[in-house]
Length: 80
Image (cartoon, rainbow, N blue to C red; front, side):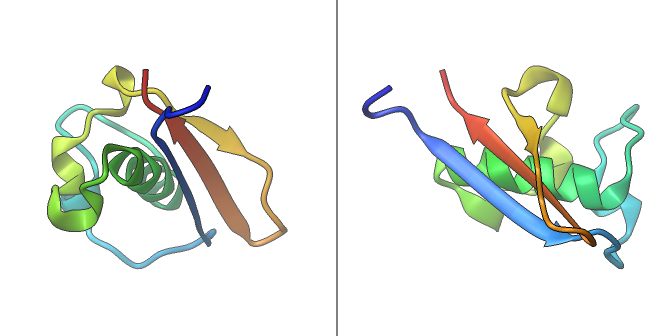
């Protein structure tokens, strides 16, 4: 896996953000989980939050939830 772009994000379980800033049309998810998954994807892409989260469609991305301490959610993204 040498050279494979990877992104990891950990967030608190409850975040205060407008759903329309995070969820793409048709997406339904817990906001903290969606934020964490999308931020991991954007970190793997190397763009970070310069790309709007609403432009990331989780169904088209490679990500996985990972174990986090109580009160937190975490995700990792590996780009093909």
